[in-house]
Length: 341
Image (tube, rainbow, N blue to C red; front, side, top):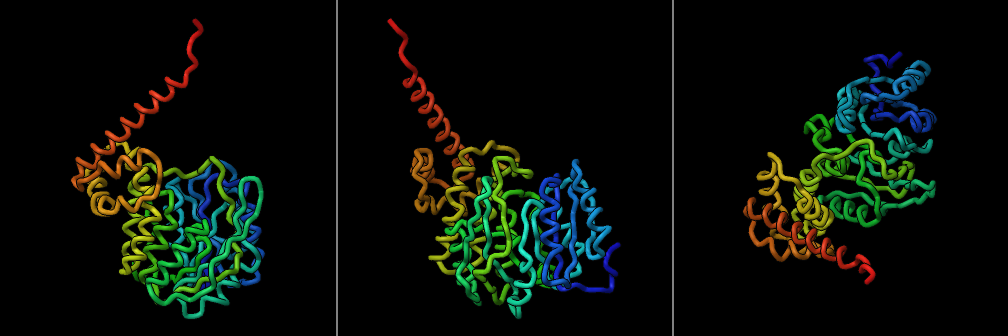
């Protein structure tokens, strides 16, 4: 039983779900036990092959504010987008099926959002061994793009994920600017979404209060990114749109520049090769000196990549990795114990 269509909840909480039977009860129990009650819960089953959908139906049969979307597997971004299409709330937030929240999660958002366009909470991070660490952001209200850029930098250096899950968005802004998750990327899709939302904000409130429990993933990941070079380039482009301040642009670019270079070096050219290399030449090649990664292949690439011409960039990356692998081979061969006389 779903909430009547004419009832508009204050918050829509969207939960993308894929083969989450081991953690889903924990997640849903935490969302049901909120001190704030004017919300709807949208569960998006993204083609699960385990008991996840059955669990969703069990909860929906007990709680009329729960709705279910059952769709073919399309990835976490597609699942969140489907939830956004159904959402009726004035505000929207997201919770991942392997995480949980405290009872004060939604009430904290509502108490703080006021006239702000975005509210970001700090988080509690739980590693695969169960160790909990609360990482807090500086409490502040940002009213300029430069201040918002500084929050992104602070979060990065405190190892706080730039996530849709500890953020409360205004539904009308999302609709007015047609903002959705990019379904072509499955790593850092949260950062991309938030970075594209920020330029439309007049004010952003950041709080040191932490009510979201983020379970750091183990070596296993449900969603995999088939083209991380595309993702890293997109994130650099996003950050450059956020501020006109050259110092902040440099700092933001530095967050993803080393990752972008590493992905280029390991990139297997396909039909996108020329387009991505052209983007790299525009967004990264003029700033290679800013890369701080000390690895041999990064330093060699910085010195050899002197052209922003796409074929030259691709051939330089290929040559660097060929030399790198050859030197690795020589080192391994020299380490082999000599045979006895």
